[in-house]
Image (cartoon, rainbow, N blue to C red; front, side):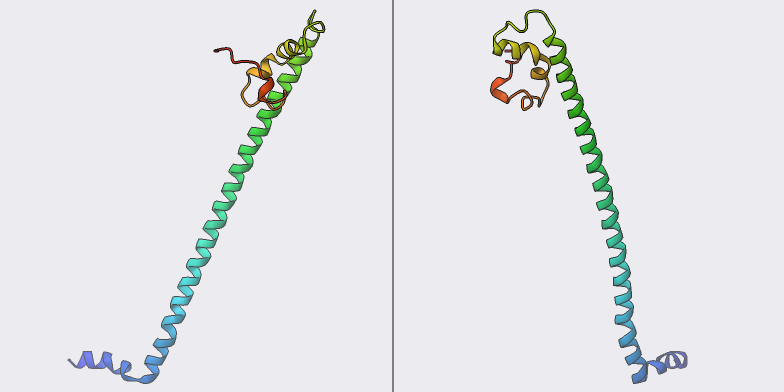
Amino acid sequence: MPALQRLARPFRSARTWIALGVLAPVGMLAASGMMLLDLRQDAWDKAEQTSKNLVQVLERDIARNIEMYDLSVRAAADNLNAPGVAQLSPALRQLVLFDRAATARDMGVMIGGRSHRAPSRGS
């Protein structure tokens, strides 16, 4: 029992309790601050990765759209030189010139909207 009393003696002092009362919240505050900084860094890293992914998706989509426009314009230019195209009616000429564009997905806007699109080949 004397060893237990020797250990308990420092905790009878008011100064010890005051010091523990101050150090405990300061320690908790420091631990909370470190956790917040770590969470902030994680959020920043995720935001950075998300923005990189978004840029990559946009880059691929823009490249795909430019390629589709390029193919459509090239096809129209090639078909424009075909014999007899100038004598066709405007609706038929559009079908001939923009045949590949009309069958490509999401290309209706470039050739004048959905009302001017060629009927699908399956119907």
